[in-house]
Structure formats: structure tokens, C-alpha cells
Length: 349
Image 1 (cartoon, rainbow, N blue to C red):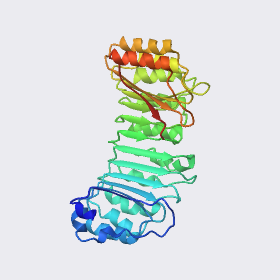
Image 2 (tube, rainbow, N blue to C red):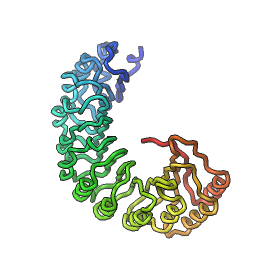
Image 3 (cartoon, rainbow, N blue to C red):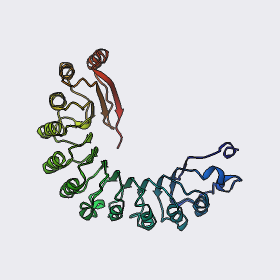
Image 4 (cartoon, rainbow, N blue to C red):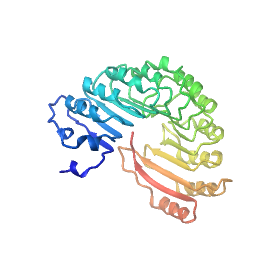
């Protein structure tokens, strides 16, 4: 009854979160008229442990996927590999491997898409080496995300650091990063066109900070952990990255940046394009109302008249609340047209 209401399905999510279970076959691909509404499917999110018959049936009618997300929970079937191979214009690929050692089984059927693929996300949570060298085949990538939790996952980056991605604009390491020396070489080759760079929740080296300034002159959005003694490095980033529009920083006493000092650096050294400040607070804010107001006054007096977007990202193990007096100041400068947007968000990896 439901499928009879669909004339053309564009996006399908069919996954299972239980591993090694015999799935009941959701055999909607056998319904009369299926070919008519699945021919134009553009996005598919599936688990590798779905029945082979599902992948076979889909491969007979669906050849125009542009986005494919696969949760790898078992060895990929030949039918899944065939489905991947038969796509004509695959642009986005997300592989999430939390169970197996790697995704090596489906790599051969991915190489066909080396010319069309522009966005690649690889997610892994095993403390084992994952195969990354196949990424070198996709030289038209505009966005790369490596979301790994362990150093060992990046062993292949020793070779991958030398690969050229001439169209790369977004590089994201939400968690662990490759060794600094590998990252520096990679940025030397690929940093010039980067507009978004996130180098993870792990603290890096001074040499890497300097390489960002040297090799990534066109960065617009940046995220990195600075130690509490790296306020000068933050200053250099703001002074040198002329096109920077947005930055995400960690603040908190003992380990990370001091809120007051951070705001002073932002107001004094950020360039004319900058407008969005994201602060992840590892503790509840200790910023005094007078220091917050001083920041807003300094922002108001900048040569650039861009309105400020201020986003506080609260720590996932604490309840964050902006003090009543600080909220009064924020509301005051919103009404004065200095602040465009203020939000408190939950932390997300």
C-alpha cells in the first residue's frame, strides 16, 4: 500500500543494527511496478549484512546512485559488489567499518568510480590497520573525511601523504590524525585549495600549526585543539589566514585555552571575513560579564562590520548554562545588532 503511493523514490535507508542475525527479507523490491519507482534512486544507505537477494534485485533496476553509504557488518556479498560496480555516476561514498579488520573486499569494485567520486568518508573503530591506499585512485575528490580512533589506522598514510588531490577543498579528521610529519607533507601538496580543515580532537605539533599557515592560505573554516600555552599560535592563525570565516576552539582551565584570552585574540587579530566563533567548553564557563562585554565592544569597533555568530558547544558530561548576567549582555548586543546568532549546542563527534 505504501509503495503504491510512490511514483519515484530518491532516497532509501535500509539498515540493521544487529550483527549476524538472519534478517527477515523485506521484499518490496519484488512488488509489481518496483522498477518504475526505483530506477531513479539517487541515495542508498544500507548494511552489508542485508539479504543478497535485495542487492541483486536492486542492481537490476538501479544504476544511477549518486550517494552510497555502507555499514560494513560482514563480508560484502557478490551481489553488493555488483550493485556498486553497476553505478554510472557515483559521487558520494561513506564506508563505516566497526566490526571487520578492513573494507578490502569491496575495494576492487570501487575503482571504476575513480573519475566521478568527489566525496569520501571512511569511518573505523578498530585498533587494527585499515587499508587506505585505494584512496589514491580518487584524484577528483573534493572532500575527504577519515574518522578513526587509533594511530594504527593511519599506517598507510606514510604513502598517502604524497598523493595529489588537485580539487580537494574539505579535509576532516574528527578524531585521531596521522603523524604530524605525514600531515605536513600532505598539506604541502594539497593545502592550497583547502577551504575547510579539521585536524581532530587530539593536540598536534607546533610544526603542524606553522604548516597550516604556510600551505593553507585559503582556509575559511578551521577546527583544532590548542593547548593552554598556545595562545600565540592561535594569534598567528588569525593573522595569517586572511580568508578565515569560522573557527572552533576548545576552552577550559588547566589544559585548553582561557576564554578571556581567546576572545581578546579573536577581537584583535581576526580578519575582515571572520564572523563565526565556536567554543567547546570542557567546563562550565568562568567568563566574567565585564570580559564578555569588553569582547562585544571590541567586535563592534572592528573595521569589518560583519555580525557575530557565537556558538557554545557544551561538554557531553556536564550541564552547561550561560550565567544570567552573561545572557543579559548577549541579549543587549543582539538588540544592538552586534550579534547575529547565539546558540548553545550539544557536543557531537
